[in-house]
Image 1 (cartoon, rainbow, N blue to C red):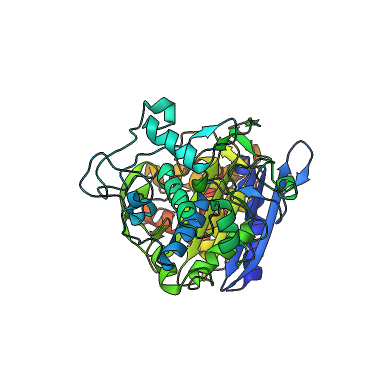
Image 2 (cartoon, helix red, strand yellow):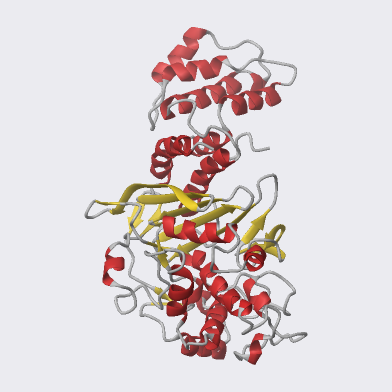
Amino acid sequence: MDIDLLAEALDAYVPEIMGHYGTPGLSVAVGVGTEVALARAYGLADLATGRPMTVDTVGPTGSDCKAYTGVAAMQLVERGLIGLDDPVEEHFPVVNPYGERPITLRDLLTHRSGLGVNLGNWARVPPAPLEEHLRRVFEAGRSDAYGGTVAPFWVGPVGARYTYSNVGIAVVGRLVELLDPEGATLSEGVRRNVFRPLRMESTVLPRAQHPDFVPAELLARRSTGYATLPGCTFTLPELYPGDYPAGSALSTPSDHARFVLALLNGGGGVLEPGTAEQMITAQASGGTLAGPAQDHSVGLVFNVFGGEHPYIGHGGEYLWGWSHFTRGWTEDRVALVISANQYDLGDLGLSDRPSHAAARLVAEVVTAWVHGADPRPRRDPAAARGYLAGLLIGDRLTTRLGIADPPAPEEVTRIAESAVVALPWDAEAFRQGVGEVRMTADPLRDNVETMRREVPAHELELLKRQLGLPGLASR
């Protein structure tokens, strides 16, 4: 795998992706083997001042920091201070009212404790220490979303189903504090036992991203977060999650990539190889924020996916301005981390909204490279858009309607010359695309095969969205 080819591809595609989704700034890191091999940054960290996004710009990880808390807990398991399948109520008073059996650390790390979905217990002021915060949460016994009116605090017996829970990971963080032999807070323990050994010098997991808890130098490097809707960009007031072990870290993509690489390489000195393997291999059936899914598996915190190039994944969002994306290919030993200062205000948990979809399109490019393909564009963006539009119009004028005769060259020229387009395009590539469409024995299949042959899959995903055709050739 030639990392220079990937760098060229990212430089070509990422600005196009950001322009399509209105992403102010985006930073990406790719780790290969044991080292970060590539780091790139694009766009702006702050729109008002014009401060550029750089590879050293710090951004909130959101839920991607759950794995930091998970590693800290597994370090205690390795030291014999708690068992992965020990009841946690021996240390922290959390009892599932549906009974059947006690909650274990494994249940919490695989989101199968019976706790329901919650958003993180956000507030306009930094939260209380974790012990006090959790006491209040369990005394209230309700989800935070819409005041507890849309989701139950408990959803069923322990182990019965996957339900993504920020409170559950906050409980793990409190267990880490209670069992730390030196009595350290979670923030200090993770800094000492995870970040420092892995040279994650720009990463913290504070109680709040606030001057009282984060070094001034690090806060000064944080990007400005933006909430977006189509055609709208907002800078909303600062908020802080009470369930901070589940979502309050600051990091750079390069730092987080070092963390993922450590797990892909047998623990990287912060975990024993067998423990690291547990975290990144399937432990139970999994799901998404929306609930269980049969085709998903979960390790300890990480989502686990199979196939020819198996990988782990997670993601995160920090309200209301940032998104984070992680993927690690377990056999290829490649880590991808993407940070963007955008949070789309569409429905919660939908992975195809802009603040997630931009990262997913970047991930398509890196995935093609991991799979051994040349990820660089075959055409420049204007020519690629023109060619795909030509294929589509050629189909609409002929094979879609069962018409065998193609449009005359002068007709195609007239269409190209009279077109009014919002994005730069190439008229000659358009004419070429129209000319590729012919009536055959199976024209629909042949049209799709032409499209896939001429436009690489990772490029096609972007082009389809630019042209408003996200479902094109998907079935």
